[in-house]
Amino acid sequence: MTGTPPSTSPDKTTASMAANEVRLSMRQWLLVGTIVAGLFLRIPILWQRIEKFDPGPDYRIPYRLSNDYWMVDRYSRHIGEQQIAGEGRTLMIGDSVVWGHYVSTDETVTHYLNQLAGEDRFANLGIDGIHPAALQGLIRSYGRAIADKNVILHCNLLWMSSPQHDLQSEKEFSFNHAELVPQFVPAIPCYRESFSNRIGIVVKRNVSFFGWTDHLRATYFDNAALPSWTMEHPYDNPVAAVTLQLPSADDPPSPEPIARPWTEKGLARFNPPWIELDTSFQWSCFRQTLETLQQRGNRVFVVIGPFNEHMLTDKSLEKFHAVRADAEQWFREHGIAYFAPAVLPSECYADASHPLAEGYARMAKELFEDSRLDGFPYAK
Image 1: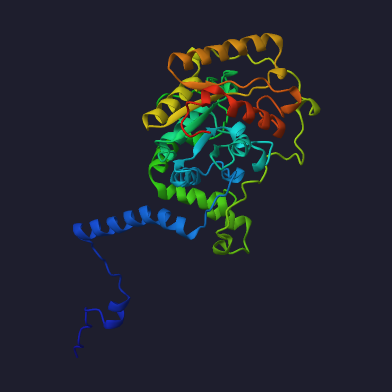
Image 2 (image 1 turned 180 degrees about the horizontal axis):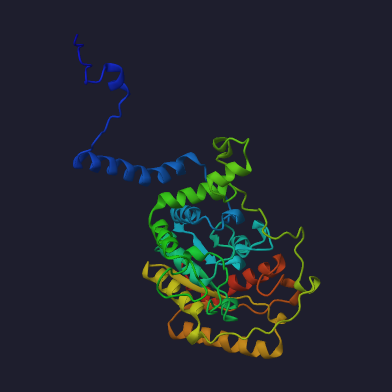
C-alpha cells in the first residue's frame, strides 16, 4: 500500500510566520533619506517654539549650560533680533570675566553699562571658562548670527601667562571647552583626543541636531547620556524630566555663599612667566576671532583686562606690562579701538582676573566715559 507523499508546500500558518524581506528601490531610499534629513533639520527649529526662551535684562548663559553651544547660538540669534532705539544691541563677548564668575546677573559689567546707558543696550555673551582658542571655534561655528553688530571683545592676557594656559605644554592635560578648539590643524600638543572623536566633534559643529541633543542632556539630564541617567534614576520617567524650564542665569558657579577679596582667601602672590605674543597660540587665536568678527561686518571694540596686578611679583609684573604694551601696540597698528582699564583697588578682585561687584561698577564707569568709545556707533 502506497501512501500519499506529504505536501512540500508550506501551509498558511507557516507562511504567515515566515520573515518578509522588503527591498527598497533607489527612489525609496532617497525618499527615506530626505525624510530623515528633514527631521534632523526641523526638530531643533521646532524645539525653539516648544521650549520657552525669553531672556530679560542682564541675562547670561546659565553656568550649567556653559558647554551648551546650541544654546549660545540660540541666544546670539535672539540678541541679533532685538532693537534698542532703532539700533541693534551691543554684544560683550569674552570669558568668565565678562560672564561674572563671582557676581550675580545684576552685578556684571554689562549690567552697570546698561545702568549708565539708561536702557538695556549691552548684552552679556560671556561664557564661563572659555579661552581664546575655544572662543575662536565658538564664534566660527555657533556665532554666525553675530554679523553687522556692535561688539565689545574682551582680551584676557591671563591666557598668555604660561605654556599651559597657552596650550603649548607637551604633556596631556584636560582643559575647558576642548570641543571648540581646532581638531586637526593646527595641532595642539596637549590635546590627545582620538581621531574618531575628533571627526564626531567636527560633524556635531555642522549638524544642529547633535547640538540640540547636547542641549537636552545639559538642561534636563545633568549632562549625562540617557542610558547613564536612567541607571542613576531607575524610578524616574525621562520624559517627565524634560520640564521645559531652563536653568536660572543666576545660578552661581562659585561654591562661596559670599564672594570675598583675594586677600581674604589666603591667595599668595604668584610669578607666571608670560608668553611673548609673537609665539603665543592663544594670542593668535584671539586675533583670528577678531578678524572673523570684522569680516562679518561687526564693529569691534576691544577691552584689555582688568588683571589683578596686585597678585604678581615684581619680576612677573614687569613682564606683564611688556606683554600688555605689545598688545596695545598691535591694536594701534591695525586700527583697532581698544580700552585698557586702570588697575582696580586690591580689594575689588576675587582672584587674578575676576573683579567683585564694586570692581565691575568701577570698570563700567571708566569704559562708558572713555573717549575712544565715542566713535563706536550706538554704544552709548
